[in-house]
Image 1: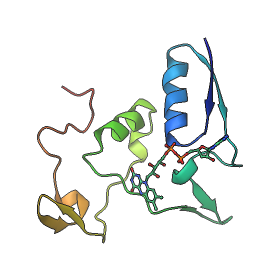
Image 2: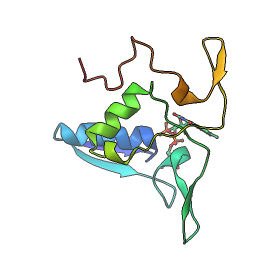
Image 3: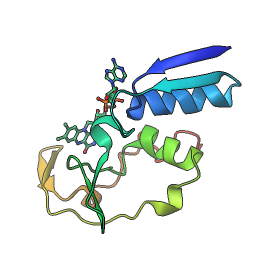
Image 4: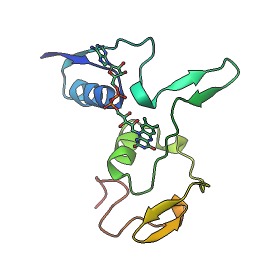
Length: 110
Ligand SMILES: Cc1cc2nc3c(=O)[nH]c(=O)nc-3n(C[C@H](O)[C@H](O)[C@H](O)COP(=O)(O)OP(=O)(O)OC[C@H]3O[C@@H](n4cnc5c(N)ncnc54)[C@H](O)[C@@H]3O)c2cc1C
């Protein structure tokens, strides 16, 4: 099956990946000169920088599952943020809070 996806943001690219894995011939149509949508980067030549401030929390099981699926899990480096998160009535840096027992890190893990 041939599929066209309009928009090469996170959703379009994740969908393209999943459909291609199922054997579809996928074409992603992106209007911008760069894929990634809101989650893309500025290229300053010597270094690149997030276009917007983005974080991944340990409880983001679906995103972490996708990252593992793409084989780039080893590129994720965890660090304490200096940004506060309000979670269950407490303010703290994201990694202070372990994932809730019902939230597995990887949805494929039993
Ligand atoms: C300041 C900020 C901080 C954020 N921080 C976080 C965070 O920490 N963690 C988190 O999980 N999320 C965060 N988000 C949200 C996250 O960035 C978005 O939810 C996610 O990137 C949306 O992805 P998307 O593919 O749905 O849409 P988009 O990223 O908007 O991608 C849509 C793509 O479609 C393209 N497009 C649109 N119309 C057309 C067309 N007609 N033809 C071709 N291409 C088209 C656009 O150019 C774009 O590339 C943040 C967002 C902002 C703005």
